[in-house]
Length: 511
Image (cartoon, rainbow, N blue to C red):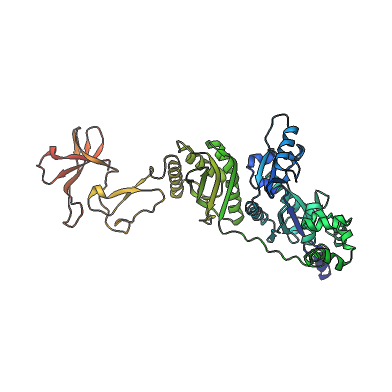
């Protein structure tokens, strides 16, 4: 390729100039606290705020709008209009209190999802229809064009049942305004001349300005930003604020809009508040699925895995219920987590109604690509064993499942102990390369029992005599034997006892 052709191709390639995608969620106050199953049903809901003495409706969703509920109505009026319109006896109108912190946390979680399409994601301040700004100028080439990129981004969020309004423009402030009130569902303005034309047509109510500013200009007969632009600049400053003129300059791409980017968190922490207290295993699993899917997406984006994380169930009264979800190996499969969580929940004989679910994961592992063996090897057997431990622990409890490990002791009955599946094995003398002691029984009896079966074969006697400083002294003979019924046992005899077969007592099984 010649230099002339190469320079021409670079000039025609997209991504040379910045291009911003604005995503605004007009029902974020509803969707941030709505269970996943209700996002698609969209029950009628209204956001209320407390004015002096009277709670008033601040925002409504589409289902409540169809029933005659409007912003500005008092709560009693809204309830009355809803009852008059919904005579079929369907879903009730839900009133939600403002929770700005929950909305901001939810929007930032969506920003983490958007980071798989661009490295620069911002969250502008907005009281109405909060959202995200994505710089996608350089991402269009990576995703084979702007149309395909927009399709993937919007499908990512709308597949979750979210109401999204989008707009694309060269300037971030223009895209942000067009996404709220540009008239089109998904506005796209790539040319700077068309950008100015679209901005001039913007209604003042779409600019996220204070209500008193908009009211003052409306009383002057102004309704669009183009009409306001034609007024003398000094006169506009006298009637509003210098901040308004700065924002007008941004809207006409004459001033930059400095926005801090969203920083990915170091750990995963999410929670969901439930509208109605939830009971039952399947109901809690359904409500927890959204959090588990978000955790799996969080891990996939970072190419990390997790083998344990914590879940906290909060109740109307009483302390919260902690749950630990563990898997045999690190991964990001929410289906395995759902199975483990089901076993954990089924282990409770009685669980108080749950009002909030919180999940946290902070210890991550980086999965190793490795190689898959054709036949089962030691790693596969160990993995299957760990999987069995975790399933038994989830069903029976942490203290009910233990394994036997060798311990560095002289007395045979003290040379093994219980070990939890998650604990590390204690290194013995044999593990360090020392001598290997004779085989020991796999099960020691809590008390010595008489031998009721004839003894068919005797093993060698091993005499144990501890020193005087031992806390529990031991002076006895131990001896393996085979009974007539085929069982292998271990026998014990006190040194003070008389010689003979009758002095041996049954102390362990196997060996």
